[in-house]
Amino acid sequence: MMTVKISLNSIDKVKSFVNDLSKFDSDFDLVSGRYVIDAKSIMGIFSLDLSKPIDCAIHAADGVDEILKMLEPYTVK
Image (cartoon, rainbow, N blue to C red; front, side):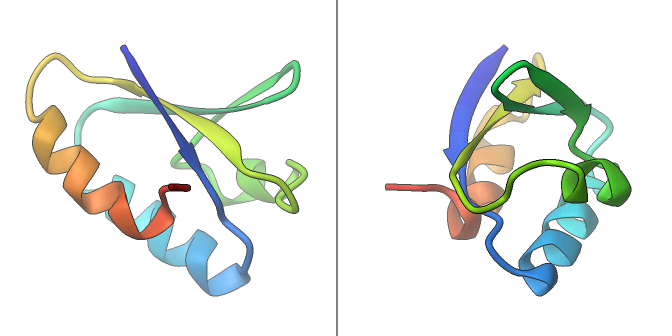
């Protein structure tokens, strides 16, 4: 498992994030405080506080480089 800090500060960003993740068979979780939700769930994402960066946990054994490249537009530097 690998964790990346991301920012989803607009509705369009959330929609494109979910669409991008849906291309992968791996599991992804978003962690905000004590809440953990499925990152492929658009309704779940909107239940989080999106005003702050959140952690994206990547549960993938292979293809991690491709996933990280796809996540670059959302990653907090």
